[in-house]
Amino acid sequence: MDIRHLTYFIEVSRFESFTRAADHLFVTQPTISKMIKNLEEELGVELFDRSRKKLVLTDAGRAIADKAETIVKASENLKTELDDLIGLQKGHIRIGLPPILDAEAFIHILGEFHQLYPHITFELIENGTRKIEEDILQENLDVGIAVLPTEEEEFNHFSFLQEELRVVVPPSHQLASRKRIDMKELEEELFIMFHKDFALHERIHDACRKAGFSPKTVSETSQWDFIGKMITSGLGISVLPWSVAKLLKEDVRLLKVRNPVIEWDVAIIWGKNHYLSYATREWLRFTQERLLENTSD
Image (cartoon, rainbow, N blue to C red; front, side, top):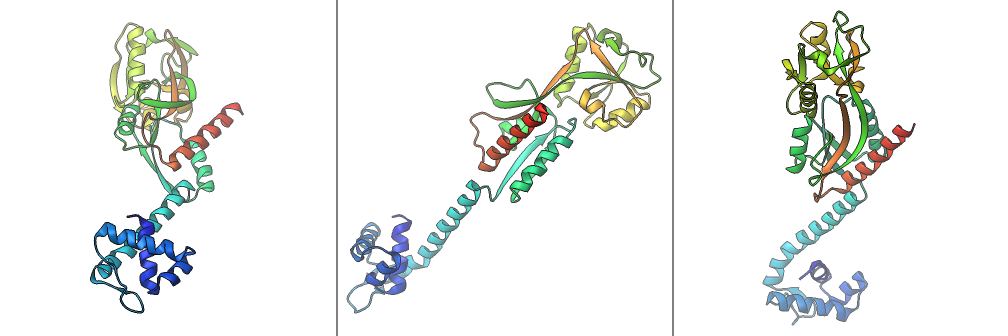
């Protein structure tokens, strides 16, 4: 039994005639008679009393009729919904964003996408890279922004930002007049860090270890704007990406660091072998295209 069987059955019961139902459906009368006969054989019951001048539903026919219209309508609604999804008339995208990211350009691209597809909605969830990766693998997020490297066997990615990190100190700091320092010179400093869910936490610890020391952490946070306030309050120093450090409103000094140089590579990531909705696929295509345009400008 398929939807066509039920559709033909509904039309025959409505017109009380095989011929009139066939005319309405633009099929031949033998075709519709055969479909009804097949349905009766499959169900093991007679659906129409054919002994009268006009067709009348049997008890079994009335029982089927009560459900058939609901099933056919649900099928039509499902097809409409699928057409809307495929045609990008609706959809919902869950995106993981690290709060450390300068999101202005990213949000601008979201706005452009919304102008093209006004019925697609977004859910933006702030977290560090490690939690974003976890949520994508558990299918709680569709895509996310993360600091590379990620697990190559688990994620596809599109890299869109590479830059060096800067040491951020208050103007009164003894190193404030310098343009470049060695990482080793920060051995006695108190560090203000992002917490462990952020890939930068591990990146900075690795750089310190390469320079021969373990950083002394005075505070950990998930908000980059708090860091500027803590630095100017004399709590310690920090190491931030250039694009984030330049957003700090406080009066601070940004120093290049070497031995080792600390870099970050930011990418859009999504799970390998995970289903991506039509809306998510189009958003990825659109966003990659726009980010490439911004890079080439």
